[in-house]
Image 1: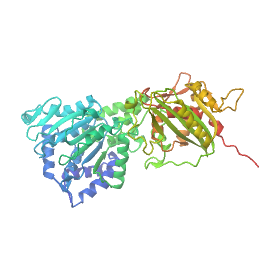
Image 2: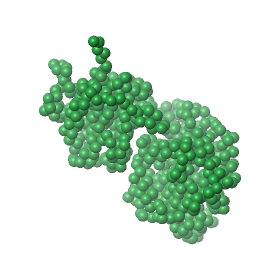
Image 3: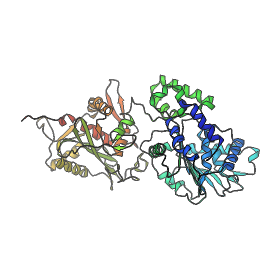
Image 4: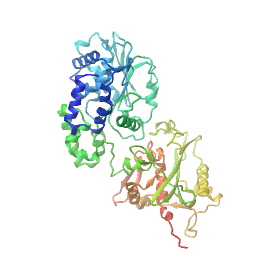
Length: 551
């Protein structure tokens, strides 16, 4: 049985403040903390823990109770290995994430920790961000008690006794210099778009005793990235208590979106709020501003309350609605199934605006009021934006949910490849129309002509190839219906991560006449080709209406 005053104090605090403790922290206490305290095989190095608290509060500032609580679990061991080698800490903006992690990181450098060459690497997505974190330690060095104990530059802090270094780095993998870190700190992982940046630093682990990793973050706007995957993993750990990787997930967020209007619930996302009056005041000011300026809501919900949100007045639909297009249960990520659609009436939609970038085509089928969309994307390997794209294109290529696109080697995406894909679908479905807008239409018309696929005209209304001349007007017509279908959960993407990404990258803009149009949220790096192909197919959806025949 492990006994620790700071742990006991926090458990009592959580019990006495149920409205301030969110579901994830309650699960942490129930399924991780309490079972750990009952274990007989766990060694709690209380002496080192006490030394850590004393060091941090002497050289930095008094620690908050929840910070002391988390620190304790960094000093628990099984067979001389940290019981919790990985910490995942999420809290709202302004709660002192740097002030929480830097004193502990600095302690790891000292003889009190007792491991020589225990290098600490602080990693963030931007240089300014990582410098701000490092500056907390740098400023602490400017007191008499630190003189002679550390060699200090603006890039490196070295303990003279242990030779342990504290340094910073950006998440750009090319900057890794081959050090053997004892501790890695990933700051604001919500901004990371893939695991490349993380893996390159983690690969140096395993060469120093007692390796530890801390992931410190708020929520953010990059979806389908490392943060979402980590949150899914943390949720499973918290719910089941099964934790083979040794994560300690301390997650602070609202339990429900509607709690944003209850100031008592703000403590769920902001554990430092009761100790920092300035923070409490600023959150209140931000809330009041949000009430007057609805455009501020996404930022407030995401950064202050750790509830991922966007400006729903501008985006196609909510992230939960997008997830429903792929999953029958979005929390458990249960796949959303679809009936066999082969042979049914179908519409093909094509988006092929830039021959050197992305192109998409898809097949649209309607079954029992549900619109089933299965797309395919072609990506030019020589696209100037490929390396900067905010989606793990090359990293996850061919894996489950990442197998409905292909990378085309060459200077352009050949239109013949897209045409062949359409012809293959025509052998599988009863194609009513092939729809596209004016971009590259003439090129495809020539190609389809060679296969005997003719154009829809006034004189030939049964032609298969349909041109949408004014895509903006067409989108304005179908936008209300698309919005309704998302809300009702009647759009089925199947297991397609790239289709969810496309949709999440699309915003709805309303002009002065009240007409709605679809645009990219960011013009170069956040592609939406698959969603635009879906829209042009939806323009012809009336052709999919089931006809009841009486015999």
